Length: 397
Image 1 (cartoon, rainbow, N blue to C red):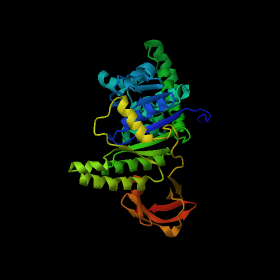
Image 2: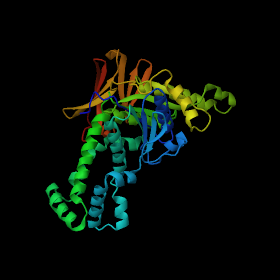
Image 3: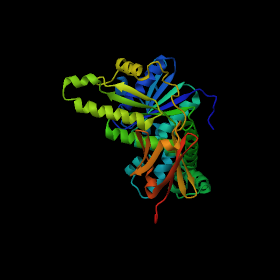
Image 4: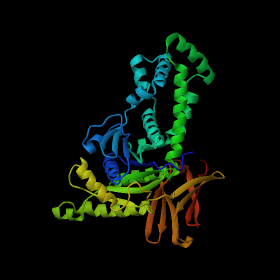
């Protein structure tokens, strides 16, 4: 288990591509450093834009930008060459044995998920070094982020399925191959196994809400909100703590005076209300549209000040899981935190892939996991400040 006495804090920013998560992550890192935290911000998005946000050249190792502020853009092939050379040789040989030509084997030596794994291992290195007070992860868009966060739960597959070898055979054959060819197969296999063990440790760190938090970044737009809600559902189900929602690029009301923006502003008001209702009781932090491209320290400082006000950017803004799911006698029980309500105050119904919860004149829509499409809502109740919704299999499913 993670060392609870360690003070290092981890913040992970994610959201649909193009919503400004890199800008918000960079602004948070800059503000935290100014407040005295030794801060490292890691970009794990293959389409890096962190260097653009700071308007500084970055590389695959941490670079000092200001006192207490460091930044890095994780590079898969650099990471493999520096840290996992034996494993790379192992993968090349396995693929060549399977008849794959050398050029294709070189590209395939980066296993599916290795991009996420390399980012996870850098995070593991810096977290356990204790060199930083705060580590901020500027992650890939939400789909890739879920892959990143669930990677430790799927990695054992590679040890049991990806290679047509048993561990003993690897040691025996690997030692012989190393003696005759110099290729360290046995060391590569142990490197791979050690990698998976470190990923499991980081899974525990990232799912510990006293250490790590996810911050969801979105714009007040229909498709963006829908993806953010789905990401929130899965992050909660996987046990990751989301402590805030950030709504970026909000047009000011006076934009309506410029003409042509009235309909957009009307829709924006409705979307902001929907965000408050969908993500309550999470704090919703707002960032106004600056009406210009955002890069460089000056604009990032403005965004950080607006985003957090008097708050400490490294603080835990919300810790209790909003909802969780458990299995029970072939059915699934979804629990949603709805404090201060009685059963007569709440009505629920299923609508497509959503659970619609009506509380007075307020309605909240919770996106459901896809597998529940084969289940029907069999009733709900309020108990100890939580709504319990029961889903049972559809007839014939």
